Image (cartoon, rainbow, N blue to C red; front, side, top):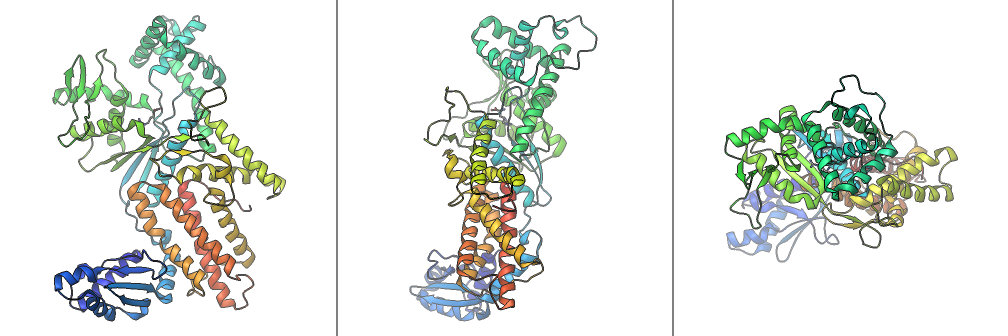
Amino acid sequence: MKKILDLITEKMEQAFVSAGYEASFGKVTVSNRPDLCQYQCNGALAAAKQYKCAPIQIAKAVAEKLDGSDFSMIDAVIPGFINLNLSDSFLRSYLEEMRVSPDFGVEKVGAGLTAVVDYGGANVAKPLHIGHLRPAIIGESLKRLHKFMGYDTIGDVHLGDWGLQMGLIIAELQERQPELPYFDERFTGEYPKESPFTLSELEEIYPTASAKKTDPVFAEKAHTATFELQQGRRGYRAIWDHIMGVSLPDLRRIYDILDVHYEKWLGESDAHPYIPAMVEDLKARGLAVLSEGAWVVPVAEETDKKEVPPMILVKSDGSAIYATTDLATIVQRMQDWAPDKMLYVTDKRQNLHFEQVFRAAKKSGIVKETTVLEHVGHGTMNGADGKPFKTRDGGVLRLEQLISDMTDFVRAKVVENQIVADDEVEATTQKIALAALKYGDLSNQPTKDYNFDLERFAAFEGNTGPYILYTVVRIKSILNRYGTWEHLPIAPAANQWAKDLMLAITKFGPTMESALKTLSPNLICAYIYELSGAVNKFYHETRILTEENEELKAGYIALIGLAKRILETCIDILGFAAPEKM
Ligand code: ARG
């Protein structure tokens, strides 16, 4: 379906042509004076210069050529603006087409294209902490947005499962239990199925080992263990399997609570097999060069304003690093999925890393010239006081703790206000808490820092997730009391509030398009906040269910029904859902 702005621009262009002027002057924009009109065209001002006559004359001539049935107001005003309001019939038929079209007639710009979204970035053997919240939430929503816009999407968690942390755990385990068969190089039998550690033991082993990194002897052992693991040492690989077996279910459990789901649970370890051939190829083609004993890929460009250092491919000690792994991961993705687009959602401080990797990928032809590689760098989530989030003892807060703090807070409210029956408290609480958490995050521009404010995010009024849910629940309850409504066609606006609501609904398509283009879920949040405001205003100003004129009533119901479907679609893209009651 065409966007309203494009439709009116086309009509305006035709009017310019009919009046004897060039079509290109007919661009229509949303009015910046909504008190005067809904849309405006300023083309007569520019045309006046070219045709050397008064702009108002052109504006008047063009206005005469517009089809009156499309507009309730066509006003040529000094010095030469054309102000427009849409007619009821135009608005009605546009909304009716939205109502009956799949996905409200949004143009599927991603049809035939594949997008990989790399988000989450959990590190195996370490519990998720609050730093993992933003990439998970933003990434999930960008993935859902791409899917909605027609892309085939692949979400990949890209686990940190291959680095030094694995060697540290192996070295620590060896100090504690040297008698285990994993450390006996002569052992050729089958290793135990049962893990030598539980999850909570693992969560203690890792930080203990990590703290010993400053001990040169221990550090050396950990480095050797990492190297040997990567070379395929059998016993170490078996320990690695245990680490994964113990750690992954817990990571999945938390991501499930967040309603964050990955199509692929690949990790750095899966990129490992691609590294040797990639490195050889880059060396052979002269793209990698030796620099102080390391192999690097120079990626600086003449137009750089800041220095972009070369990407380090192989360190002087022969080891591959973060960038090597990311480049090899791109090799794997291109081979297996040939995506048209790859998005990486991580902390914005990783920006230079991705710039280097992307340039190396382009320069070497690992991706096509047209492959879109983009880093969505997010800002930091701070505490309510604007300072970095810390637990009382100064540690990093676990993500699970943050989620349960929010859930407890919401549950208390749900119980206190007796919102639902006892057996529904938990499900309702989960939905509201998730909305509070996700909307609180997503309503901010991804790059910006924000303060996590539990009470503000969970409030039922204001620009919050729960407020949006509340609006959806309110509509649902009206629709339920009305009965079957899905078949009802949109009727012309019966009052000003209905018209405002209709106009808000028409902005759905343009909003989705700009959110996609700018990778900004916050635009969807701003949109549903506006739409919810329009719904609630309409609800307060209009007798809906008590309206005696059945036709009018049916029109109202159709309108809020459409608003509900759009709100539900939007919150699903953001990654949460509304309960039945609230
Ligand atoms: N595991 C990494 C970290 O904790 C994040 C991974 C992000 N994704 C990527 N392809 N590098 O910082």
